[in-house]
Amino acid sequence: MTRPLALDASTGDELTSFVPAALGEPDDAPMPAALVAVRCGDHLLLVFDRYRQQWELPGGGIDSGEGPHEAAVRELHEESGLRLPELDLAGYARFRLTRPPRIEYAAVYTAEVPARHDDFTPNEEIAGIRWWDTTGPPPENAQIIDVTLGLLVMG
Image (cartoon, rainbow, N blue to C red):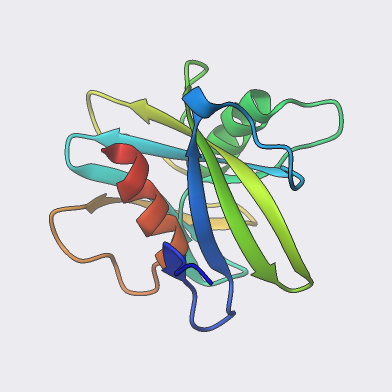
């Protein structure tokens, strides 16, 4: 068995691999989600999910009739207030999830902004945003899978 890139010890969920966009979209499992890693220099945008009580990358489910890019743009705006229609596809994160047990992918997009955006109004899902300085440790209550993925695609 291969060692995961990241393991959430509290849930048993794993980031098992990352497929760069240049290798094409994988077809061995469903891709119901899209995530976005937005950077500003050494800082990575994280959002605080009220339900999971953790800092994570903006993103979420792909709605019916929506493609991964459209979902990423929509979720980024809903969860952070940022409206960035020009996102770059970095690749596909492969997850082994436990509740319920399944394998699935998320399309992972990136963007770089010249200045940190702090204009955010908390909503029902997201309590706040923060720009994590990736030269230091992740914030307390950070989702290890998401920060690992963010560092991976930031290069």
